Image 1 (spheres, one colour):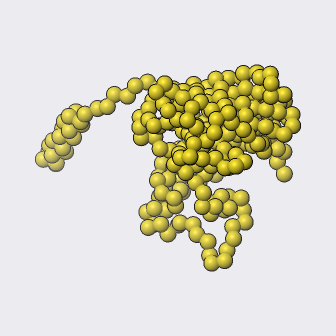
Image 2 (cartoon, rainbow, N blue to C red; image 1 turned 30 degrees about the horizontal axis):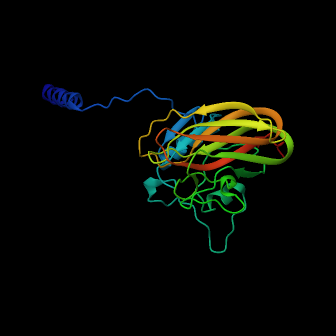
Image 3 (cartoon, rainbow, N blue to C red; image 1 turned 90 degrees about the horizontal axis):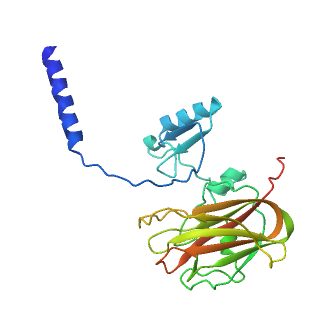
Length: 258
């Protein structure tokens, strides 16, 4: 028994010494956007993680499950991966989204209003918009390489709702990387496209790490007013030559649930 205790203590001392010798990384203070507010976070896609998430949800908790793979049950060699049978067509809204083949951001923006938009700068050939412009309202902003519109300057984007209506929020999704840094987005409204009311300027304090190839950053402002036009003025960070915009969205009053 004494010998076992001695070996255990020796092992513990070795582990402590190894940890003490491990180099540390000091990170600067920064603002990290909050994507979700939940009661329980479960990390992992195994059957155990899924079971834990389900039980927590059954108990009334808001749950966020973060899985490293596009399927659940990784400890069972992917046998719980979802697929369609031959000739099968998804019918539910969730199934349609899962099998759409499109990488969709997981942010629910609410009642996004239909709109048309114009810009004061032409899009560049590298990430060109359609004619008439449509890529900034296609609901996709997960990939800068495939789901962005590029401008060689500071674009001003004006959204036209077609008529004056109640607007709750306005969003601009802008990519941020060492090659396309942006400084801020200013959101304004107008009833006649002549006189504008600035609502907010959202500053981007995120550092240029050079390895951020994920979804665009969500820059938002409350509106809480009736308006027809919403203007998004996107500014580059000093030294950056281009801007990559993924999406703009104007959100109206929530539709009543059926």
